[in-house]
Length: 393
Length: 230
Ligand SMILES: Nc1nc2c(ncn2[C@@H]2O[C@H](COP(=O)(O)OP(=O)(O)O)[C@@H](O)[C@H]2O)c(=O)[nH]1
Ligand SMILES: [Mg+2]
Image (cartoon, rainbow over all chains, first blue to last red; front, side, top):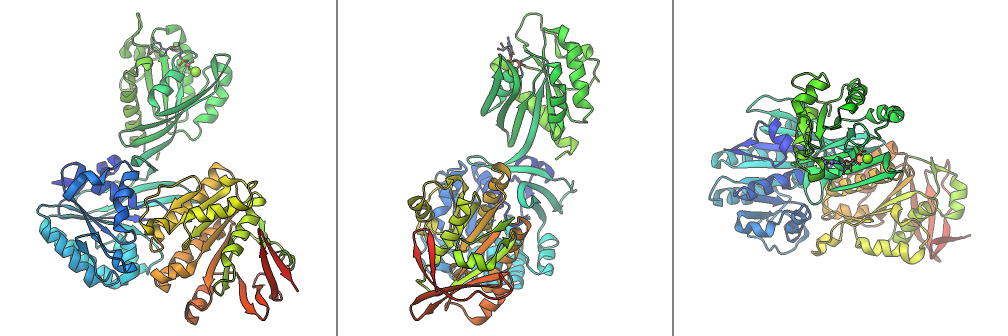
């Protein structure tokens, strides 16, 4: 059995997820959101009918269910399939409402006792998530914690549990960090920040797995509330001739969108946010008229992928479409052709359009009716696949 | 990029403080460190800076009230508060525009994330490049985490202040920590604001921010002003 992390692109790179009995550490650069990864993983396990154990170290256990709720995950509904090990109350001298309590959170032995107990009591293979391994390391010391981790991981293997740790990579000793990144876990997922003066983007990537091959790749993400971790595509362009349906398409895909129109046609931008199957994207519609081609070029600059929207009944526009395709393809970006207005009499089929545009036989041309949203998310999926393959993120 | 504290005579003596400076503020209990910290932040806000305040003793709401009750003309969207208190009281309050919740003073990961999120918003979305970070106080954080842990945390964040050309102010309760703690932490800072009890109330001075320490000044807090005497 394999346990999914609940983060789609990550599960792909883990070759399905984490096999039973194995461990995974989310190894995070300080300042980058990390705990949500572990929460999303335990939530996934439980919502798939499994059991989840959450070891809290820096949060009052009374708050844990609220934290899950902020992401739209209702932990109250999990019932006894969700268990909290309270490694916090002991620290502040508070009474614990939980069944599993770590009496001395600054003693690794005390933690081990509680963790072994909960692992034994679990009646089936479960997912155990440590809210903050770095807090444990801060409290118990680096070497005592490293030793304890090995013991917890061994125990997990014995009972076929999956253990997941959130870890913030504060400047611990190089030796400690080398162990955490290197040998004590079966898998390591790095969570990093894109920094220049400040952190302005976040990414994750698999650094190590010992059950399959690693494809090294950084994937941008965003954290949505509700929603959790989403693979993030900061800029997807929607281009095409005038009246092809660009604005309609942007609105059809988006959870939120704004259009700035003048004189009835787009001279400024359509802008929308998409949240679909674990992917979040910001999409921008471009003006269609020729005189705006320089703007299209400019906008393509940092784009990750492009939709080229066509009115499938309007062959007169294909020359223009072909030209726009050339502008954008010269940027080397993944493109999906949207054969829009398929509901209209005389609409050409995707195959006919592909031939009309003289495109390669595997170029993606997707049939769409933007007004009724038919085919829009299929087109999105195809573009996302292309973007992910292209490795441009 | 330069900063002023908003403490008149001391500002004159110290001159412009250059971006990337980290300052420790140390003083006895009850000497008005909360007000002084907020006033330093306030002085940035009226000059169109942004301010991030990590609050470990007061719920974030109280800190926001402090600013709102004193001056409605400061841009409220420039205020970011990291609240380390509310959730430890068992209240599940969600983040707001101005207040982001950390789980507790032990939750250094969360505190770090929230500080970084405010910095990102001010820099990237609002294009405000002058930001002040006030941590009030390190003493609370030191109650829950050991010196080495706090040192690691500060090592990272004083570095980020430097990288961002921001101004960092870190408050410490005098008399609560042993000498070793103070000496260790001092290494991370470029200068100090010191407060002591004088014959006639409290006194303040800056040290390490100019070639010579400033003289000690008697002071009184009057609204958003620190009035110096002597
Ligand atoms: N029948 C049909 N009409 C569509 C479709 N998509 C867009 N339209 C219409 O085509 C016109 C132009 O659409 P718009 O999105 O403004 O095009 P833009 O100039 O490319 O932004 C509008 O009247 C839309 O209602 C579609 O799939 N089917
Ligand atoms: Mg339009």
